[in-house]
Amino acid sequence: MEKHCTDAQVKGVSTGTTILAATFDGGLVIGSDSRASMGGEYVSDKMINKVIQVHDRIFCCMAGSLADAQAVTKTAKFHLSFHSIQMESPPLVMAAASVLKDLCYKNKEELQAGFITAGWDRKKGPQVYVVSLGGMLIRQPVTIGGSGSTYIYGYVDAKYKPDMSREECLQFATNALALAMGRDNVSGGVVHLVVITEAGVEHVVVPGNKLPQKTWSPSDARQDSFDNIRLVSSLCISMLEETGPEWLSEEVKTGTTIIAIEFNGGVVLGSDSRVSAGATVVNRVMNKLSPLHDKIYCALSGSAADAQTIAEIVNYQLDVHSIEIGEDPQVRSAATLVRNISYKYKEELSAHLIVAGWDRRGGGQVFATLNGLLTRQPFAIGGSGSSYVYGFVDAEYRKGMSRKECQQFVVNTLSLAMSRDGSSGGVAYIVTIDEHSTEEKVILGNDLPTFFDQ
Image 1 (cartoon, rainbow, N blue to C red):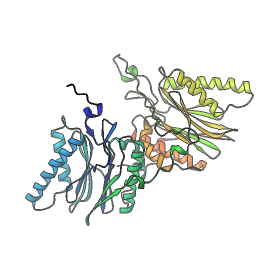
Image 2: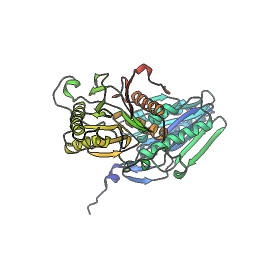
Image 3: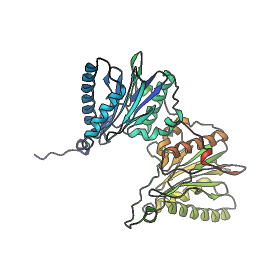
Image 4: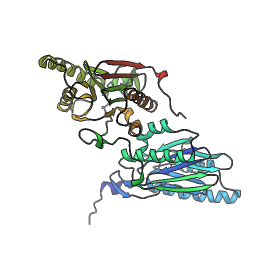
């Protein structure tokens, strides 16, 4: 009899996942979500504990293939138990991490698993080590991993402080994991946390309904719910077959990180300034905030040529439209024109524009367009760098922010994305629009705010 298997069954069980470890003054917290999936589609286990104890005060978190991770941790536990008997003392955290590293490196062609190893010993106190896929070993005060980690890099960089208290570190870890679970489809369930100090080990489980909620939810938006649509516009462009440097053989792309946010009475738009072709930076100071009319701007991402062409066409059409109606056009009209072009030519174009501005009917407004989809949001982010700051913007955005607070929010978001995304960089361009004026500002790279940097 012929046996048919689903894709999920063929691909095998993976942990998803989001894992985290962070040191605080006197100890550390290590934790993870609890979802295990097959092929990223079928949830095979909703309550698996990915925080594994390998010795009394040494734990590891696993990401990748669940079978590989369990086999490695089981072998590591045996080695560490044998080592502690030989030495007649508990093993060092560094020794545990080295055992995992050796196992991963010697079997790197067969294994699909990575680990965070964390613990406390009398020699060096609390320690956190990353053992990446392939067997690389790095010590860090805070680290994250798994599929959900991408969305919280910005939050972790902005919020982690090495001298946090135990309670602050627990809250930091819980918030970070909750934010990742809110954005990553294959992270979810409950949060498993372990607190390790000289005094001992404490296990904490936070049920899903007890996790902190995002300060902003897409259900707060004025229009359609947009939770499952991620404004990530690092659109793939096929490589040309010609030989030579990448900047000659690949299409020029804007990188990029773009953002727009409403405040009471106007909007703030921002972007980085790096333009790349493959791995080559072809322009370091391009202004990606393009005026469509006096009080309407758009932020560009994707193919630079496509995005500029759309902006120029819409700028022309809005000029004609304003002459015909005898007044300034509405922001929604500009966004609709962008949407129409993007939808009509969605097979040919690789561009995503955020349209924002002010008009006397609707005040400050922000619209996101992607492949012809149009939605109004209180804020929108896009570009390759946006993935790294979803957690940060979800945590930090709140309704009713002032003009100055929104400007700082935009600058902080851009700075965090530029520090993580290789395709974003340069300077930050900021445009603030309200009823009375349109203010343009450039913030140089050495004037951007800095956050935690290992």
